[in-house]
Each structure stands twice: as C-alpha cells, then as structure tokens.
Amino acid sequence: MAVDSIRFGIIGAVKRGSSFVRALKAHPQAELVALCDIQEGKLLEAAGELEITRTFTRDEEMLTSGEIDAVIVATPMPLHVPQAVMALVQGIHVLSEVPAAVSFEQCRELARAHRRSDAIYMMAENYTYMRPNRIVREIARQGLFGEMYFGEGV
Figure 1 (spheres, rainbow, N blue to C red):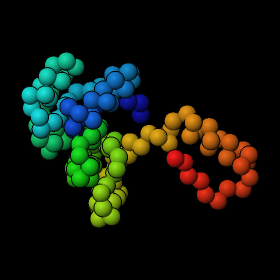
Figure 2 (cartoon, rainbow, N blue to C red):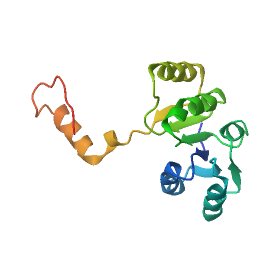
Figure 3 (cartoon, one colour):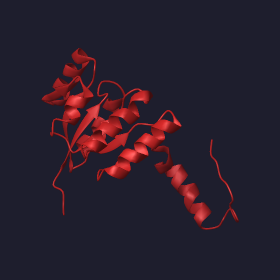
Figure 4 (cartoon, rainbow, N blue to C red):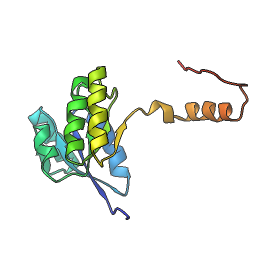
C-alpha cells in the first residue's frame, strides 16, 4: 500500500530537533505537522517561523493526539527511551537521536516495546551512512583489505 505522506512531529523541537527540519521539508512524502518542547516561548517562535500550527509542551499530549504518524525524538538522552516507548505503544514510528538508551535496562525496555508494536524504530546514527564510511565498506567487501576480522574507525 502506497503512502501519500507521513505526518511527523518533533519532540525537542527547539534545540536538537531543529536540525531535522530541513530534511523533512525537502522530502516529498514527509509532512511536519507538530512540534513539542518544554520551552514554550521558543517553541511558539519556532512554530511561527516554520508555519506549524500544532504545538505541544507535553510529549504525551502529542503522542496521544492522533495527529502524527512518526516522531523524531531529539531530547536529552535519558528521555529517549521513555518517549520512544510511548510512541511505539501508540503505533507511532520513531527516529531517535543517539544514544538509543542510557542503560541496559532501557535497552531491554525499548526492545520489548518494539517487539510489541507494529511501528518502526530507528536510531539516528548517521555516521555509518557518510560517504567515506560507505567507501571503506565497499573496499572491504571487495576483499582489498584481505580477510577482515575486525575494523574500527576514528
């Protein structure tokens, strides 16, 4: 089934979340419809600049509003899992800033929530997709490094 557009919301929209706006605006199937941040003044300013009419100061209000299909979680690290779990429970797709979790227990909680949900979860670790890393991966696949057992970049 083809999707016409995906309605996105951003939690943590004022600081880190603002870095995702350009990508969302550039994608023909992405529709940025809601922003959430605890800094209400800055939130309203950002929403005005982006012409977003729907704003929230509480994450659970946005996640239970029925107004978004996917959420970008760009809040302080300890909040990533609680917010991602709330979204997954609602069937909302999640793109979460790194790290995904701050403890093994949070990792387990996130994995359990994802298994119970039909929604997609992705950690926004973009470094692995950068061109130099893709080139090195292709060189390794061609066997030009010989038989590899381990690799690490700095």
